[in-house]
Image (tube, rainbow, N blue to C red; front, side, top):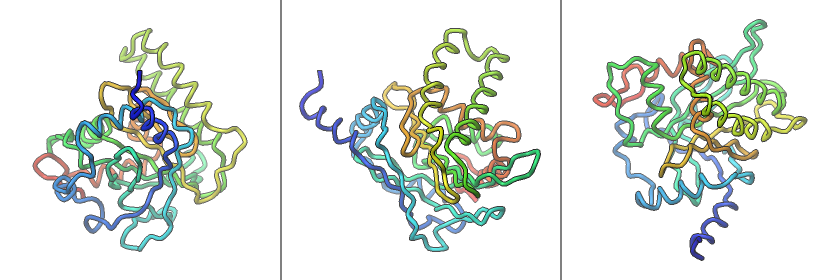
Length: 286
């Protein structure tokens, strides 16, 4: 049974409203990994972080809100050259639960391949302060990206180039996840029992997106992938819509953006370029 103080913390957490703001860039261009790694963490201690992460992972945060701060200086943002949509270099998520700053690693446009229509711009962020990030500089870009998305908190910010709908984005996410599921079955990376256990989180993820609600041009949608903590399943939070806990779903949705051509080939290419020299012995991202 929870103590009165724990129950109070849970109630406060459930009411927490998360807002994204802009911080000054740590370097010209993208993140300076050595600067970030040496920065003083905004944590309340390992125990407090773990407790907060476990609390966050215990709730469907249907009331979670993440808002974009529009008061950005030109030097604080990176512009997608294909759409002229800008993204902050640092995503700061104030919350009662300590969430570290996330650094922009790459941006790019998502196109409908057979028509070449620009659907949305997407940015990939990650917590580069996480000491769990230990990867050789000689590793391939695929290995570096997979190491990052497996070991630290990440985020995707999606900004449509035209009026669309949540259901349209949902259908794209579900196609990508079904494709990842087919690949996992072919490679025998999933047991029949694991495949069965994935179905409920997939249904919950799909149900979070409203069928008729529009997502207007240049209105952002944030997906936050929290790092696994305390043995709890990884938590995927979708701004304003809710959250779902499942390691496979969170990891494979991120991987879908980087597998082969990826959901956004342009974003994948930008991330590859910016992590080329990244590694334990060279912590700078271009």
